[in-house]
View (cartoon, rainbow over the protein chains, first blue to last red):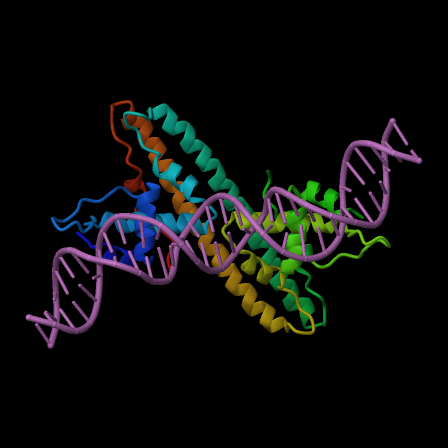
Length: 136
Length: 136
DNA sequence: ATTTGCCCTGTAGCCGGGTACGGTGTTTAT
DNA sequence: ATAAACACCGTACCCGGCTACAGGGCAAAT
């Protein structure tokens, strides 16, 4: 079991962030020691790291909450989870596709810069970016 | 040429957002009509769409500014562009890899939900998320 | 045993990224 | 020729996501 400070350090966030996530319902309220200290299981580290990664990929905390809520229980039928899971899958796939277009644009830019840059060319990025944007 | 309102509509942002991006230096100051109205070339639409897509992938406006500044000119040598471009490439690749791990976790979750959910199983998401987090 | 450090619960403030508003000038449609 | 729709500028405000106190209690090290 971990104190909030140990958890924060492991997950590379501030202590206040952990408490903030708890208030937001992104992590469950942990058990307390007799004196009232929060006491976290080791898996909390995984969860917080997941939240930070998903954020870095452009998911909002509200969306992350939905991702974390993908579980079958009293309120979620397996069918409902399947439906919402597939929707999340679609948004993940769209992000991957857009990143791959961005990647190709940067690679193209760098290679042209290599060839033409030596010749005093211009290497404009916008040109390389044609069609990179995500579809709505 | 487009008015700011037309540009905003095409790019699916608010007029104020376009002016905000101009203040931030993310889009160049456009030429003005005699009466002072901004007059945009069609390619501005591409640029704003790119900005919105990059944001949706977790890039901050500051990072996007750097991406857009990947061009060889008086202040940027081709070598410098190559160096910064490769750094951006690395961050793009990391995002792709993390999204692919997330994707696999969701797919796994859905398939298990299919098999075990029908049997009254639990489908916990955290378990599927082991190791999804981005590396630092 | 007391200092140092970490924990608690508030509430308030900050930063990034817009968004809204007020007052005014310009185009365009009727 | 006048109303509606849009543009200008400036400033102020809002929301998401933290971050920083303040004022107090507990725990580990010297």
